[in-house]
Length: 150
Image (cartoon, rainbow, N blue to C red; front, side):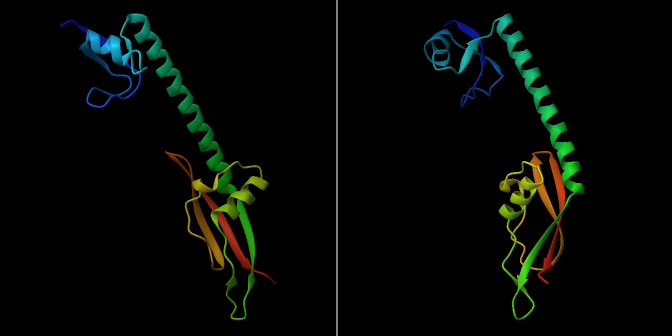
């Protein structure tokens, strides 16, 4: 049986991951992998194009990481103040959630989704460092102050 080299453009179980160049039987490539969009024949031009796309994707990811690092430095300089009502015992009435923090950050011009904010709700007074995961490799620490209503 004739074998051909193909470039996988999607992960294929028991064969390889996207970007792998593998040898398979001609019929498997022609009748299944290529028509289903899992692979391309591994010609020089296809491999060169794939390398260029891969390089551009890496540059884009590096640029996004740098942008998130700048945003992390800016957010780390911020300080958010929340005022909670006090019950008869002097304890906070209510709590501060990640949605509350995301809303206040949005008011200050930062586009941070609440799912990025790594915290449980705050239901006590004090100053807290709240971690915000902006990128898989970039964390920001936001200072949050919760004070009693006067």
